[in-house]
Image 1 (cartoon, rainbow, N blue to C red):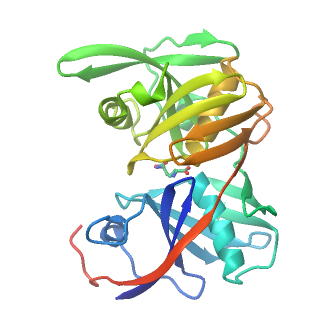
Image 2 (image 1 turned 180 degrees about the vertical axis):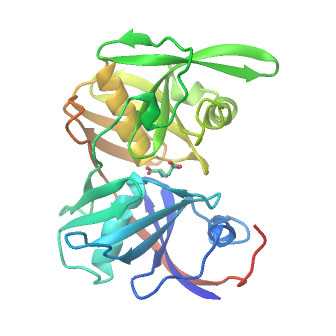
Length: 294
Ligand SMILES: N[C@H](CCC[C@H](N)C(=O)O)C(=O)O
């Protein structure tokens, strides 16, 4: 099948965007994996599908698949690209969009400088919301938050790491580190992502606090590996940092791919706002086999 796509990136987190507003493409898991494949396909961290409004008051449905082909609840950098995409292709003329994801409805605001501001919804910290199996674990309280002990068995050695956890609709575990560039993301990332206490796996964030309003963040993403930036991961890391009493309400998040602005009041009833770039890189098309082995 012949697929037309748009390649986009938000702070270096890159996406294949598909327009399914005039009909669903017959894609299965293996097709999403092939589109994301950087050698046999287009190459991307996630595949974003733009689908028609599912209900009154909602402008579009926003569907997200990771590079491993799995469908997931949320993608913050993708949300900004989604907004830029539908506007630039004339699928909407609105400056504010409400889109339905698996995690619920989020609101996208196109801002003048080409960036997009996203209301990412409320963070959640209860283990059951990720899900995280906290049975038998005693959290370390800190500020109004806590850190959870996570035993990581590596080369036969059991080490205990304390992580903060948060859901932005998708699950995040955040490890505080002294220097993100020296953090062993390649080794610890997969151990955290696939840890049995996260039954649906987890995005593993490595957070370095520079001061109360600036952080550096690397994220080993569930289903994609380390990406240059993770929008929902930035929201989760800042929300955890605020709860631990380490951060103010407005934080600049420096990622390897660019800078994101995150704002949260610290009240779990309030939503988290993320502002950042959204860039179209190129348009293209690809021939995909109708059948691909799973
Ligand atoms: N890997 C994530 C989905 C993409 C999130 C990220 N690209 C973002 O910008 O939020 C997950 O499995 O939950």
